[in-house]
Length: 488
Ligand code: TXE
Image 1 (cartoon, rainbow, N blue to C red):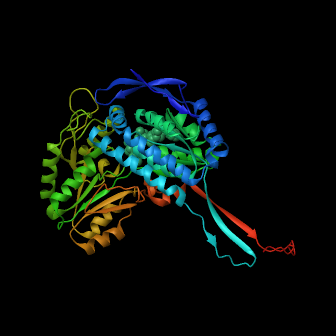
Image 2: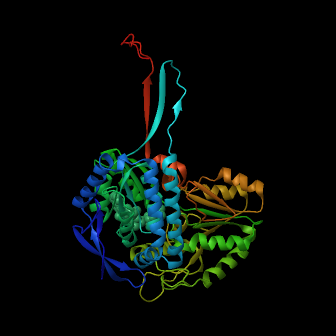
Image 3: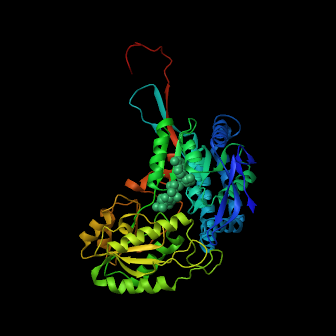
């Protein structure tokens, strides 16, 4: 079996114990992973704290930090085939997607490399004579980045890039499900030449590793992606150290199709919106809201496309849907689909777990028009399951779309420009895609509200989130300070 190590303070080392990682395509163990517990978490955070306060990192110019990030981007690009293969092996994400996503990972590092020396403070036109006042944007400190199994390299890059660009140091906690690509990524950080302790990778379990990290007294900011229940635990942990948090928690995103839309184009976008990444995507367009007059025609197109999808081993280039990452995840999906069918949802396609090894689940469509509060409509399944609800009018579409505590992504398909604008205004979501879906870029902020969390990843705003403002007052008069009892 393959063996991996933690990366702490510039060194590769074993954890307190090991655990086995399963290959989701076969359900059998393939690698020994190092398990970090309290001692390893403490070592990583202490190293990150020391690297933040002393040594070469705080003395580097922002431009020098940017150059290191640029080197890292090049190394990621060169290692793309290896990283993609590891992510596919350890999480079941299909090789077509992991290969394409690594290119994005390198792009994100390049974007933040370029941004490092553009994080500026401001000079203030202060309302007092003999005073110069300005702000400095300083790094917030030690960042605990906690990621889930899906798209770990990508979800890590959107945290590590801006954090390092801003001058922070990082302890990344890889998911216990499929940590291999992150433990391998540590080798590239090492090779790029970041000073020891600036970036550390650990992995382990929620209560014994993640929870210890979130409440550690030397952690200043927690950047978390995962489920809402875990996010609550993260926020409770941060009540100890009062670290700031950014939370990216998934959604139940509406994908809205009006009767004037190009239905073929919308059907392709919907297939990508729900079946890409085998549905394990925070932006999955998992609620299809379709105008009644085109519902049957649209569902017929979707059914044909879903049934033509090639479900096979994730390491084959022609595979379109692979296994889910964990058996736990598949059990949950099976349960929620069964509950929805019992409640009265109609099975359009899928819904049958295949025989054989591996954590496979087929692309599934449920027509929930008669049961719009079924479990599959209201809860995030995090799998290849699309729930359909029909609507008559634009107002009704908006009402259904917004009837959720989530607020991450949304999609609108229409030929009407004016309607598109009305929908953009009315949708409660951090991202609105119009006549497209699932487009991302390092330049565009991304995030949600409500149960989808808070804070933004991507764009300049994300880098600013890893800084704190220092206000500087400098008196320019040589005259003695007058009355000491009067505030000026
Ligand atoms: O993820 P968790 P789970 C949703 C999705 C899924 C559900 C649960 O609906 O079915 O969440 O997934 C670490 N303190 N999403 O339970 O637990 C954990 O080790 C600190 C949406 O598998 O949220 C892992 O590294 N950390 C989503 C990370 O949190 C803790 C992505 C995320 O795991 C911890 C994943 C604790 N007490 C799930 N407990 C998205 N937005 O893309 C666990 N962790």
